[in-house]
Image (cartoon, rainbow, N blue to C red; front, top):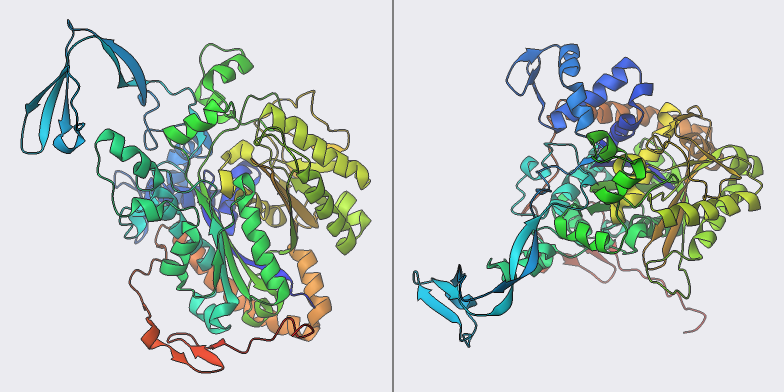
Amino acid sequence: MSQLPVIVGFGGVSPAGRSSFHHGYRRLILDKLNQSDRQETLLDLATLMGLAQYTEGGYVDQDGNRHSTEELINEISDQILNQTLIRRIEAECFDINKVTFNKPATLNSDEPVRFTLRKRQLPQQLPANWVVTPLSSTQVEVTLKGDLSVIFPGYKEAQVQAAGQLPSGFEPGKLYQSRNHPRNLQMTVFGASDALQSTGIPWDTIAASVSPDQIGVYASNSIGQLDDFGFGGLTKFPSIGKRTTSKQMPLGYAQMPADFVNAYVLGSVGVTGGALGACATYLYNLRSAVNDIRSGRRKVVLVGGSDAPVTPEVIEGFRAMGALAEDKDLRALDNVDQLTEQHYRQACRPFGFNCGFTIAESTQFTLLMSDDLALELGAEIHGAVPEVFVNADGHKKSISAPGIGNYITLGKAAALVESMLGQQSLQQRSFVQAHGTSTPQNRVTESHVINETAKAFGIQDWRVAALKSYVGHSQGTAGGDQFNLSLGVWQYGYIPGILTTPEFADDIHASNLMLSNQHMEVGTEGMDSVLLNSKGFGGNNASAVVLSPQVTRSMLLKRHGQTAINQYQDKLNITREQAQSYNQNSIKGLTRPIYLYDHNVLGGEDLTISHDSISLPGYNKPVSLKIDNPFDDMT
């Protein structure tokens, strides 16, 4: 009997804000919320962004002036809205008016050029036209004369100026002792902590309920940490005269989000790993978690990702591929001479007339449990993930071009929904969360994949959402954005519309699809499932099935019976109180990420090792060494 992987916690932060308790989702449908929910989410963003601070008795603004909640929201709501989601790249990321590049310059003897170098940077054999003058014990001045071409740094205006950035003013590294961590890893600590604390169950309680090796962490990103504290600095610093540090190499690895969670958040000794699959990376890690829980190998798995690619170098790399929406192309698309802030906010237009994707940063984590453990602990159940399908593209001409693998993954996902919930449920009560990158190629190829799948399964108007229109494309974490933001549909009853797309392109395949540039009201129980779709460079395709909370509850009732559900409900009430306590404290800006540095570090001498088990201090249950022979028919 397969265990059902159920969703018991989720969190993180994207350009839409904090993910837990659906705040990120709420930001997308803000105009559909009641006053209380809208106010809560705006307050959450205000404290996250440093625009307000909670003190005893109420909130104060940046100038220390006390306001009622209503007054504060009225004063800063426009600023909050303008400094979230996709927007023009802000100076906190980099100066779009002064992007460094190298340009060839021809020198002649009439125009000597002088610059300073460290002595250790001098070539072993000085060129004949170099005149070197000592300035100190470590530095020299070099004067170049003569006729030659050399490379000198220059500055230019960025050709791509839109990105999905975390809310302005939010600095995760200031919330804990970040010790020069790359931005990705600062975001990881925040995102994993948010997901864990959103459960309403202390991690120590969860960990004490299972053996240490029944816990898993699968988290990574697609391209590593590429800012100056990671691989970006490692490759850049030698050429600009800066010292390489001891942290840049190890902290640059793409699996580091999982490593940080194990070492500084959970203290886990269970299974760990980080799959890489370009834009499908999050769903690859989700697949590992689902397989582990279904098989019984694991009872608890934290799945996550964190990508921070809003850097000049990464943007230039994708721009050189022709993948990004450049300013010149946006101007041509909208037939304007100058782009306004509104044009930048609408840079990402999935399935519409578009010119490239919009890069973004995000961290997302989701906590899964086996169905029996979730009931035992009284966990809030937000849905379930029965399966994730992954297929490659086969032979390819261009490594970055889409291929056939996505037809297989989405077809299998649709077939599973039909098999589990019936034909009518698939046809009338499912929707697709599209990869939806906003490139001309993706709008044609992905719409064809979804449309042909709809035809094959008799779906007349398959609802399709594309959340990148709000938050941009966070590379390997994009599937996490789709996953965690989609959960809000079952709380508030709206599938977010593709608002940035004024009209859908005439070359897409949509005979059996329902695409809307308005929010689609479906009701909190109108959808039984969502199919998450990811298409990645290199031929990486993944489609995941996520079941609604009500479908999941029905399945649990059938398996465990009413008595078990009644007992679970009593525990759930306590869990919800504790979870809401965390949420309200977070709205006030009072919570801090979990970061346990140099905490309960164990060595081999601390373990108790026997023939049958290994006991670890601090863990209630031992690791069993009673390993069955999986090949007893062969040995």
